[in-house]
Length: 115
Length: 115
Image (cartoon, rainbow over the protein chains, first blue to last red):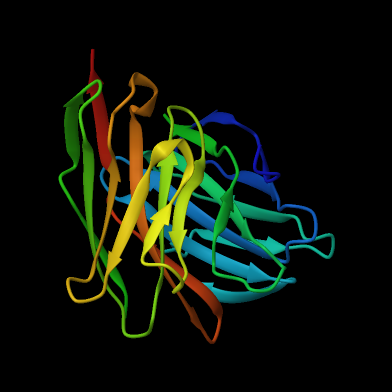
């Protein structure tokens, strides 16, 4: 158990719909990273938040957005869903302890299926 | 800029045989290097990491990797494969930039272990 929790584990929805994925980082960790894993694209970095602030954006579509709340949990919002958005969405956090090497602690993921 | 190349999307070995998974990286700054493992329906978990200390790094489950700067490689090995090693393995490079750590993952290598 990495200490990172993600909900829901599985989600099935239709094209055009909107979903919200939730992530709680390890206790004390301030950073949250979101990744998308699909068969054709591999593991793609979406976005990074640190203590409530967006720090870096990767290959995140405009239809997707995220935020990190004061209690440090994060939500990834996916809207106007398309078939190609079907994937595993992972959340990860990094240690707040020094020295920080960028080691990522992953949740078990949310599997999104768009029909 | 950073990049990671994993040679071979699939590797098959017999139980008891040597496991060798190849990874080459590029990084404009001294990198931190990682191997993560993903078992079916699970998130990624750390196998081992290189953080500029010893070039030969030992990880969990008998795996080790050697950092070779001259070859920009970080290959993963295990002397004797076990059935439980069947999983997907990801090499990753991480570096600290202004926004925090940026981690790039390779495409992954799926390891099959034959009885």
